[in-house]
View 1: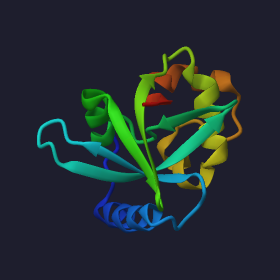
View 2 (view 1 turned 60 degrees about the horizontal axis):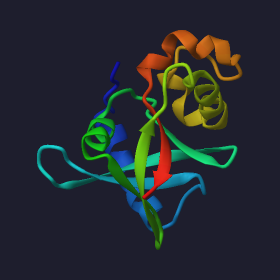
View 3 (view 1 turned 90 degrees about the vertical axis):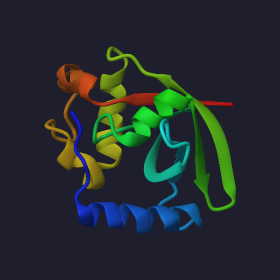
View 4 (view 1 turned 180 degrees about the vertical axis):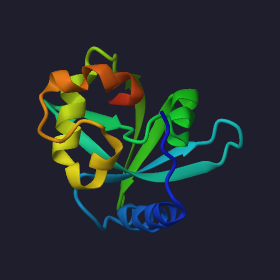
Length: 143
């Protein structure tokens, strides 16, 4: 499953990503930067950081997007917000671990991501079991 952004959404993401990179926007937002697996160029994308029991997670609500594939290939990302920047390694979360995280992610960011989920916000974790393989989820490990 991959849901590419529309042209308008791509422009919005670029502008919003620029603002998040400057430190403007909701506290949970970060600018993800990752080196392209083919070009070596650095690509940026705004993401919602989910913090659960002292751990940080990234969820890809659109599926296996470019940032996901680039991150998997390089094994490392940089999250930026204003002057704060930090490198992380990604630990892929197994499908068995995903339902609770997907539920929290959707419940937390419903207005921005509900359209990417066939399960409504507020559903129990069990409702995410059958769709968990469609959504890459990564635990962030400081590097």
